Image (cartoon, rainbow, N blue to C red):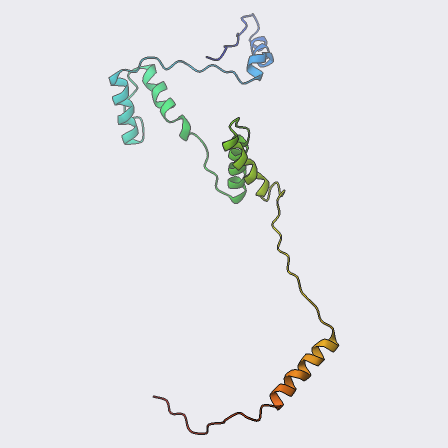
Length: 166
């Protein structure tokens, strides 16, 4: 369980806010959540009915039911990336979260993906094409040999006739 931070009580309200913001627990992001508590069947039925209608059609039967509904939909409370840059940021942030995982089976593929991404640009795929060049003299000699071979073909049989399409 996370350690709670103290809210100081004093005569000036702004002093409370400043003290809370100065708290080491607050700076570390240790903000306690309300305990969910035992959820009754009536609370579950109300939450399921609210979900099926897509909106609250009746007030919650208890504060626990309201917290149960919020906890159930907490994972869906985000803005969907729309633009290409937002998607890139979303994917990179997820890869970064995976890369900081202690399990190397999770962290290694994430680091590889980050390295291959255009944002990090650490691994660039290159294709090398080798072109062998020959001198003009070699090409001229090869052409002369080919012409000579064509000229020396005197033993060819030529069949004359008409072609008819079927």
